[in-house]
Image (cartoon, rainbow, N blue to C red; front, side, top):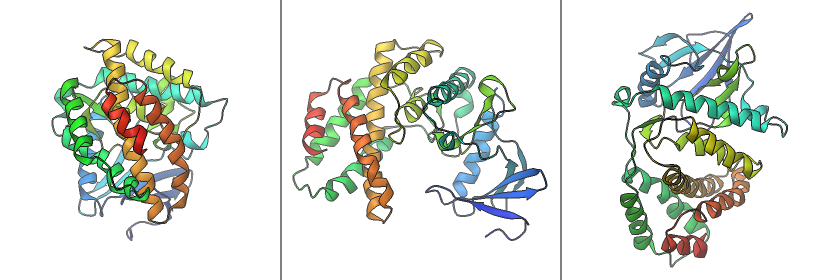
Length: 304
């Protein structure tokens, strides 16, 4: 617990070990983030902050850094996060605003600035799809899962795609980490927080994080329109069909991890997460309908 500050109210966080507090000082509030239980995140946050502060997006300004305590004091964007204002009549506007910021980020950040970030590779992919194997398969009491074939197929897909991982990825680009700032204009109305997990990877990673989130329900036509909008307004060296195939393959990786993650959290007593299994399975089914690897499709169709 932070003991050197007054007027602190702890903000309920997600699954991260960091602790977040709001400090009230009249009409001027600050956010204090305690990274003492996750020191690598402290260093990563500061490194990514130095990258993002140079481009035309809204991130919270850092006021103070207490290196010995691993505490960062920063601007408070308020409590108007996208997930709290996610109403049916506003969903497209919020999605479009989020995608507009991704376009600015991808067109503004040179990969020369990203050298200290971890680069996505097959080992990282394997860790993600392993959550499905480690938690969902036992949960379903499946005893004949073809583990070796499963990993071999994924490795062959990874090698055959020749992914060009050279772009900034926020990683947790979701409604909970986007804040509506009504005093700003245009894309700057979207405040972006919680970027300490950023890495170097696929240019469309944050796009499917926001558009294919199983916690959100909206018409599929929004996805198709905004995927094309993102591609048309972002600098790409690959054609649209190649981008789409890689988008669906890597989104399948993410959805596979989520199936395992929801099961793991449910097993730990967080019963609310089990409700996301069905929408996540629907996302997986759609991914599979857009990729060519039949052997992988057979595994998912049999064991999902």
